[in-house]
Amino acid sequence: MAGNNLERMIQLAEEFFQTKNDPMQLSITEKTMERLREIDPSTLMEESDSDGPIAWVLLIPTSGRVMREFLDCRISEQDLLDQTEPGTRYDALYLCSALVLPEQRGKGLARGLIRRAIRSMLDRHEIRALYTWTFSAEGDRLAEATAREFRLPLFKRRDSHRPDGDEHG
Image: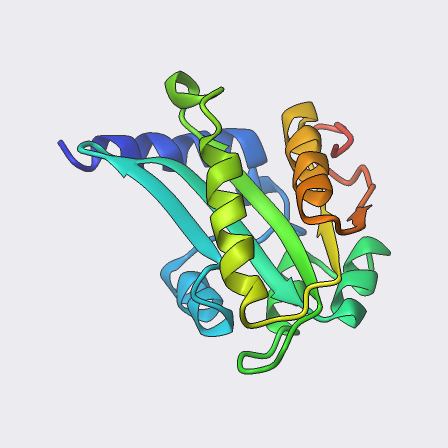
């Protein structure tokens, strides 16, 4: 039964982000997860119960240059990852995604995972800015609360390339 939540999380992620229909978004594969771990061990954080994951967050530390190119819509999330070299010190942090099972929402799980990841990264990197590309009002609020808590400026990517015509954020 331990895979039950995992299957639900994967389905929820695809329904919400629709990555298969959006080439600008990062598709999470084993290879992607390996690359993320090379960049920083705290990029992927998870909260689980006996049935598997109930909350996931993904944060990617990058350079300010990569941040600006992404915010200006010159590169995709995959490009952002490809242009982030492991083993360097980063000064920007992309708040990529947070996902919580519906029955677990409102408990502060995503915020706690993000807080833990950022604190860990701050031990290794001089993060000076946060950036995001939100898909919901909840995501916007989470990013803004995170920026306030860590006293960092928050920059947002704004574009409307989604296949269904919806604006991000």
